[in-house]
Image (cartoon, rainbow, N blue to C red; front, side):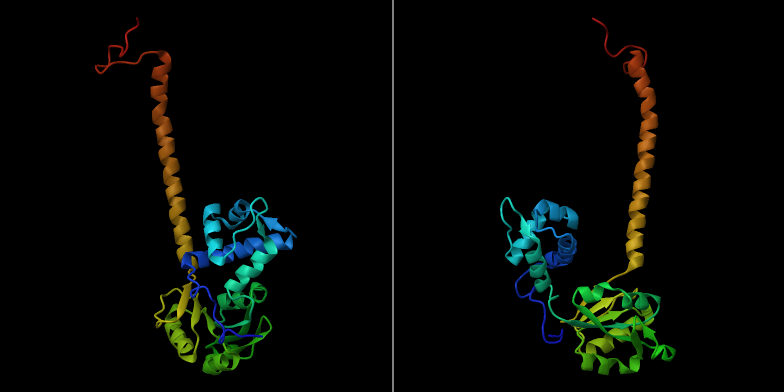
Length: 257
């Protein structure tokens, strides 16, 4: 089985835009659900709706993969699952280390979706000596003193940081120095990395703040709509009574013929 240290996804070399790459997992998730229901083909409109994008964007994204579907038939679900999985590098084994086995790190270790998507949790690492040897999701936790040897021995190129913010940069530096070239960061801080190292940040608090903004805006729009409706009642009453008035307020604006 090939490992992540010797194989890299081909998306950049083939000139696929980053925005398209970011949408490929959405398509794959929707296609996998269709495959599990034994659906043989899917139209661009149906797949776009399932993935939450518009169909024109989907067709453009798939054109980068060289997949155009068949008019009147749509896309072959199983072939697209294979094609996107291959493009994302999910047809090979990607060993991953998770650093920071607190509540979040433990939850990530117990997530069953890694293995089915081509990722193998090779090691769990924590700075607390009291955690060493304790099994989490069936994997014994190892101390951070062993980080470099773990990465070397397992051919790890992807690291997950789930430490407190204050420790994240130091962990990141050690991961990079040991040969890790892709990092998924759950720590609430911005990491500094050299060229050639990719970082994806997942900040749940920021996502919640964005949702709070939208909730506040919706509440403001509802309040504005309510005020507009209340102020519109007197005007409606005047129109129904036929007493529209002119600019001086005492002469009808339109005189009867």
